[in-house]
Image (cartoon, rainbow over all chains, first blue to last red; front, top):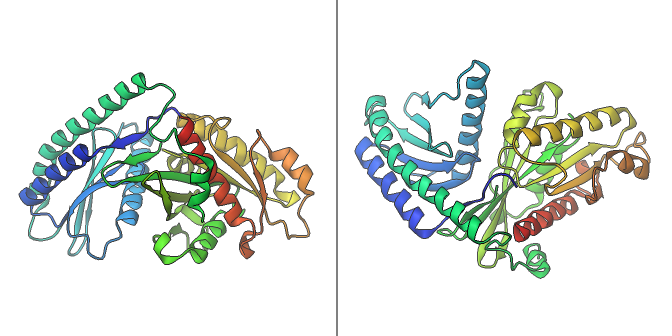
Length: 163
Length: 194
């Protein structure tokens, strides 16, 4: 496979969560949600009541992918921000560190300006964590060529999945 | 690109159903949704036109048992089969771990099958993958139609490597879970051997 697997450890998760919690507080957001560009949820804070996180992740990733396709059609590398304005709820979506997507849901208690400002700072912090993960993956790949954490999986393990 | 989350003890894999328009990709996913236990499946999302043709993708997350202490989750996607949605197909292949090709057994659709496989190869390549190496299962769908081609002849035309081949009648559900199990097995073996 040409692309590396995305491996998140306990420490990464708590780093992400801390940054998201701060962003949620500073921007008065209802929900802050981090996912990878392929539509897998990474971490979130805030109010997920009534929202299916898996659907949210998949549709957000599809949305960003389609927008990137549009950008390239008109000669841009990417449109860095997506903003959806509803009657009560708004979504601010941006790509972080080239690999992840940050989604912020907010209502009239916040504003687009405030969210943009706080997202900028949080994006820098999130990118740093993502870079650490990337560097660690590179180092691990070099150290353990040909093996993976799941190299011990047996046929029985796989059969058991379907039982 | 498998997503391994040690914090949540989860492995997430992405499987894409590919193939020509009206071949039964969405029907496969719909059947899996209908027949899976509530605890194992998430919401089925269909981004379709008013006439139920897939516009962007269908998406169904399913959860199987644990492996080595990790919950296994598979995200099933279909692509829009119609030729002019190529840009969307390319996007959906990003980060794919395994591909199911749903072929239409009718003789009149042979060219469409072949064109779709060739399109799959190109789109995988543009995403940095090689069709000859990625986990891949061939499903021969619509086997019950009187216009269906001879199985051996069809398989001989469409096989590209030593991939498993399954007969299916997706509207009746036959062959759907066999195909799914086969691709999951290949994806897990690929994860093991990486």
